[in-house]
Amino acid sequence: MMTVGIAYVLVEELLRERLPRRWAHTQGVAACARKLAPLVDDRAKALEAAAVLHDIGYAPPLVNTGFRPLDGARHLRTIGSVDDRVARLVANHSFALLEAEQRGLREALEAEFPVVDDEQLADALVYCDMTTTPDGAPDNCR
Ligand SMILES: [Fe+2]
Image 1 (cartoon, rainbow, N blue to C red):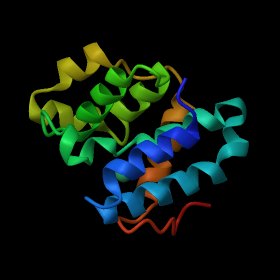
Image 2 (image 1 turned 90 degrees about the vertical axis):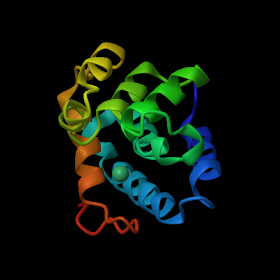
Image 3 (image 1 turned 135 degrees about the vertical axis):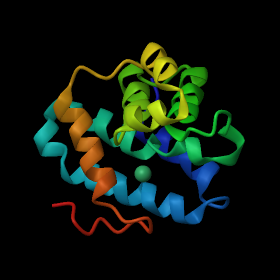
Image 4 (image 1 turned 60 degrees about the vertical axis):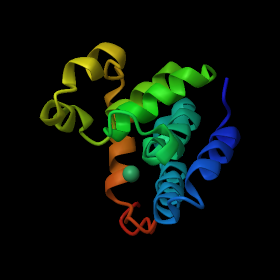
């Protein structure tokens, strides 16, 4: 199983030089996830892993459909060592279903990556993503 530490290494390698702003944002989202750890108890590692991996689909080598949550989650499935719940969180983060609908990808997204049956965990990831600036400052994550 992929550890959170390995997730950081993987995403840093894909984003740091190619998309430094996205890498900074990713680190901010992960920092927010660590702050929320007490709220999610034994799911803290899954939340942090999903936070680190949530925008991996922006990495140019992974772009396929151009819909980042789906491209990223599909890549995570090919790696094979990523917890399925984490891949599904990545696929559905931040209201991805709505954008998938606009792109004609909703059926594919739902079929391949059903929404995680843990609303608190999914909401925590959205909260971290939405309260972190594009430059990575977790300004509103408290
Ligand atoms: Fe994000």
